[in-house]
Length: 316
Ligand code: PMP
Image (spheres, rainbow, N blue to C red):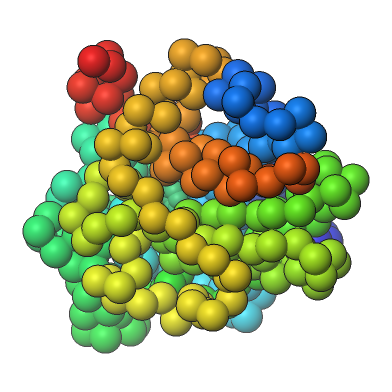
């Protein structure tokens, strides 16, 4: 069953054609120039997730969480969808909330980039700003507090603990990678935020191809500039995350991710966000250990939401 099948089975009651039907099926793009030092039989591919209608990979879990909420009957009866987010998940909720007529309230750290906050408000979401020094954990605690105070008003989507998050990737990202690589994928690596991308895509791929190595990536320190990613040892642990699932974990420095983000723009024509830069750093690290292989990762979003970080784009 794919996301589209779920959409079709539920279409009697919920109008999920139109915008939601364009989520997923993103291009798989080969890196060609930043990989020039690799052996010829080692290739790196990235899913271009900014091709989703809401501009990021989070369209997949947001849509699946909304769908399961609607199907189970909890959502869509006047309640507001509530969640915490560092930005992208909120943009996806707000996008589909607007398209489907579901009101959205989001707890967001005040440190989120101004582009993200403006986007959320443009899409009509109610934004509750939380203490920037508490990062995404502060937003999680605020959402829990609001959900506990007003269960009559809010439907708590709870992306960190909701299985519909990783299941979206099991149903879409995983099968797409299997098909787009003709089953040739040897390594899959994803950065950890909620861990939904890693857990869902990884679970599908390992079931199909037991030899595939699944690897996680995270920032190397508690205080980092990799928006969307979590340093797991110092963060509230997502309920959907199983630390023993991946066969290895790579740590990426913020500066290395910044440099690579600029290289992707200038050498590949890929104007992507910082977590995509981090993914490329880690993918190159994996690829440099191989004689042959197909390393696949995801580039979660484009660079537009990070434009206010001028030092990043102008380089040294
Ligand atoms: N990169 C960016 C830019 C993100 O917004 C997110 C989601 N927080 C991720 C990576 C990580 O994805 P996931 O939540 O599926 O682990």
